[in-house]
Figure: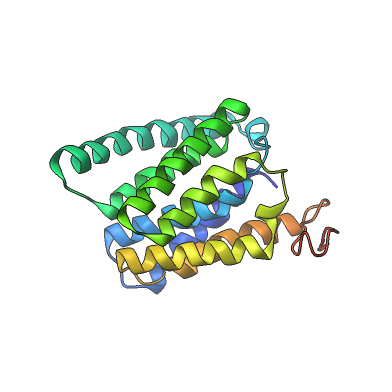
Length: 214
């Protein structure tokens, strides 16, 4: 299924969360960003299959997300390391935007960049004793080298993503982050289950793809 479709579904989930939970601008931004990011994260595996399906507008949005993320990551990194000031909500959004921009690129360089980011996040989680960030960093560093629609498209990955979301929710103190993260990731697996190739939900225990035909 097209990456733009996954992203649209994730955006709808984030928008719904804005209506369900008490509205605050920074919380709303987190819901939309995390839902959209979660809806695309399963496709961090293997060579990206999304690039060839992107139109001019989608490519523009991809590059906008990538370079905006880079800019904000640089700003918040400066504030943290030089001025010892941390903005966890906006830093999280910036990193998510950066990785979203990389998800839709392809090739070994793309995989290496994503893995490097994952290693940096893993170190940051270890340095600050945040288990969820270590788990997220490990996920980001590892999955680009996996076969497409393999381990990231399983119930086990969904459970792991829920644990990461739960840790982030506890860290930020924003209700609904776990639900939004799980719903976004699950939407990707469900949408791919409706395609002809299906999804190996229980891989490697059950190696056949599960498909649903509407």
